[in-house]
Length: 384
Image (tube, rainbow, N blue to C red; front, side, top):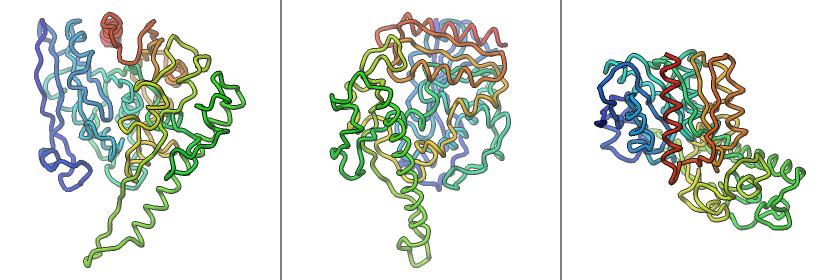
């Protein structure tokens, strides 16, 4: 028997910063989380599951974690359902508010679970909580994490996680899009959907493809910085001298990783598809990864050279135990992602778990989702 409630978590977000549309949400300065409570009630350990933007109030792991004897909390950051203006540094502040609130509720140990795109964020959070170094976002904006209240978690879990949004976004970015304003004018030499190139794809094609993906990400970053400088110095100003400091833009072609169609690349038990269906459709479908963004959020979230939410880069600075859980049929987080995170941990309090046959969301696989939860609960207790 388990019970659940909703937690209202005070958050230090400024109501004057228009980084989310809703004035109600900005003025409330409140984050929301769903807590599932174990029976009998306990205050020893709580598992906190995080992602930069996904709504985790109904996360599939909450009930089984509680049934297995630990309280479980699914957090929503201030950017719930809206990664257009998301900055990772603000998400770090939100996780800090959540962990602080859980400790005030009496929990003695907090296990921080970064699920999917939450992996890079959780690693960044713990790194900054243990040794804060970041004083501003890549665009030069608040928050200053060295002045923030960031209580460290007691253990980390990278659950069905990839290394970070900028990393996978670049691995998914379509290099055949050579004109950002004309997404269907494609370079056939860099087109993974052109049957003359594959699948299967040659090692030479994949090498050129990966280099072109990096180059496109960096071209967009260069353009973003040029736009920000123009806005700062030349954009029309009000009579009081106030200038617009941000603009939105569109990125086409964001689901074109050759691994989606060629199962010999990073081999696993996965199907040849994406989380959103066939990659050609997902590549242009607005609801998929990173199509809509703003200048400042691009640098923090999608720029491969600027985003700090990079698990392999941050995990070497983490001293607490870290568990990496990977599904062998995952179509979004690949075996090399799990290996890169595990290999980045510099101490021996680490564990790599492969759940045979599990896809990214455990669709139709409740027994495998429960298996992951059993590993997390065991890890939480063993590392206590």
